[in-house]
Image (tube, rainbow, N blue to C red; front, side):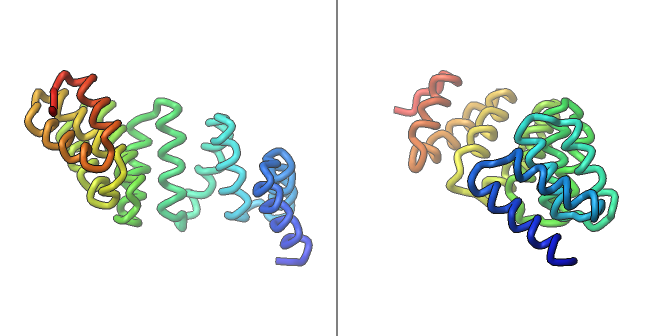
Amino acid sequence: MDLHYHFLKWSAVTQLAFGLQDAAMNRFEQILRTYPDDTYALSSRAHILAAQSDWRAALSDYDRLTATGQASASVWFNKGFVLEQMGRLEQALECFQKACDLDPQLDRAWYGQGLVLIQLRRSDEAIVALRHNTELQPMSPHGWYQLARVHMDRSEAEQAEKIMRHLQGFEPKVAAQLERETGIKLS
């Protein structure tokens, strides 16, 4: 890569740091005109497009990135997120699973997988994915919350109550929210 490339990349990163997404997008476009397969520019552009809810354009970039066969787990996760937003749940699930295969420690991929499985009404598999998420992020309430909701949907109030009591120890507001939603009283 030449000096011009490094200047464009550096200026795009700086612009992003100052919240100048449109200016950064212009820099990424400049990079891609010269280096059409530059993974950094493609990934960065896709991320900005997704942040702007331009799902189709973001997916196009993620498709290009995953077609190389060398995409990282994060790229697969991001592609899955975009597909989920587009309502393409089966494809999103495949991407989240690929991300988990590439990096079993990527907690957000397990969480994404769990959310999609819930939407697909595959609760047994959702529980497995959400348990992985909570093992990797035990102090994050998101996976615990969804896990409790799945147990309630399955009429497993005891399991939901255990999770709610666990949440009470570090996220009492989330536990209280679940109390209101489920009708289970912890006090």
